Amino acid sequence: MSDTATAHHDDHASLNIDNKKLLMWLFLGSDCMFFGTLISTHLIYRKIYPESFDPTSLFSLELTSFSTFILLMSSFLMALAVSAMHKGELKSFRRNVLGVIFFGLIFLGCQVYEFAHFVHEGLTLSTNTFGSTFYMMTGTHGVHVAIGVFWLICMYFYSHTGKMDAHESAVDVEIAGLYWHFVDIVWIVIFTAVYLIEFI
Amino acid sequence: MSDVHYAPLPVSEKSHKDSETDKYHTFVNLALGLAAITGVELVLVYLPFNSTFIFTVLLTLSLFKFVAVIAWFMHLLYDKLLLTLAFGTGMAIATGTFIALGSLISRSDVDLDAITGF
Image (cartoon, rainbow over all chains, first blue to last red; front, side, top):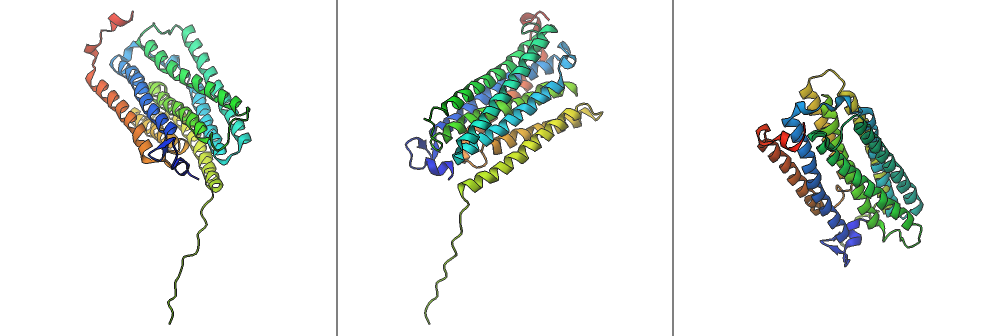
């Protein structure tokens, strides 16, 4: 049964769409503007002051590509978790969510390692505009990942309380999934616009 | 002669589980595709091609990844148009902000010495 059909004639659904889902999409739209501003600021400073800093000796494309791969695979597992919840398979949901949490933690570990390495090499938040905009942007993304991981950990433990009904909770899981996928698409943009382009 | 009424044969609708299984295969193919694209992107920046060509390919590939995740993983392809509009509005404003700032701000507008020690 489609989500639209379940939402029909429901007090929690306006316009035949679940209210929570509609709100989540609106939030993601606003988050787009937020990240759009952060990424724009970084790119515009790079454009007008290209000589201010050369990050190619600092960046490790292998590590960043690995992080990208990890995040894409976590998105895949998240899609499977949402699908499992729609099918009412709680065990499969838990298994996939654990995978997403694990991958999310690996991504955060890579980011912490990268930041520590950059700081050790002398690039801090106040070194130059590159440092300021870079840490601000990737740090904010990292915080989003951390919130997503925390959200999924809570959801995993909640699924063990017996209060989580497979069909009723499907929308809640879908919303958590939307958030996680959004974090992934922001990283897709950052990976290309901030990391890869520096090496051309 | 009596009228003969032909009734169409009942068509069995695809069950919910079947559609979820179809989605599973789509997700697997998409995940493999996205991983492969990331690999191509990584190799591409090291190849001795024209930088404009590489830039265009990178932009196209990342745009494809972006849209693919939204359409299939985020389910937008199967959902109501209103959700696409809700998200699309934010995207359009973000893109507009980037274009506007990029075309308005120039080097002379920024006093870099005033904001950093650089």
